[in-house]
Image (tube, rainbow, N blue to C red; front, side, top):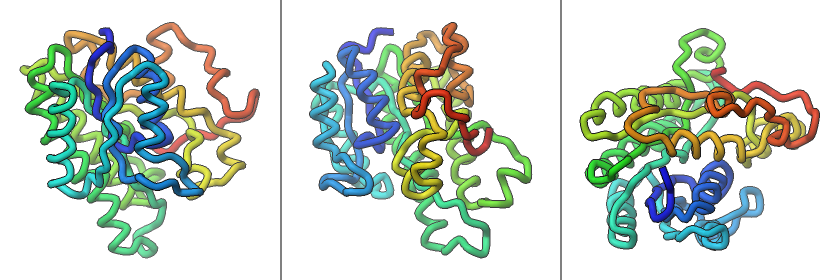
Length: 272
């Protein structure tokens, strides 16, 4: 599929993985809805919806910057309406926005539990619900959700059950939508990295520069997403993909260019 003039709604698109995907698709002339909360620069995080929109347009796409907290249903409706009013429809929804806290049951405050479930689960559900009437009108619609394969083993459950539940719920929705909307020609898949990715979450919350240097760049997920979304006629639907596997299907097995530090030993991501 050509992405020229296709409209792609990306949550959490002001930085990191979401922005990398936006820039990759913009090079093909896509219309990108840059939906995120950031309207002012945060020194630790970097990037706003406006700075991301400028980069997208410089890369060859068109951009609509929309301030959006996906916990707010009314904001979702307004953002989707703006997208349709501006570009005439929606062809792809990328559910990238997510909250993380890797704490056990006793250490997880209720407000953090609620935050992860409000963003990761409820927000993802409401985003799809709002976009689906427009995706149903697209000639080749996709939903892509950034969430892992469902792996119900102790290693991924007991150390941080609140976060794990929220991410597995995202994958359950991705799989459910593949079946529910197959009749409408809407593909739905999940995508997750094999290794940690150099993002603000990794640098600020998980492992600092040391872990970032054992990670891959966001480009690997951007490239994997590009290949998934380019498929037509439901060729890819109902999958919980790992980025390496997607690239392997395209004949790409040398992944050295994605390492933050050339030759570094890479750190395997959660849930893999």
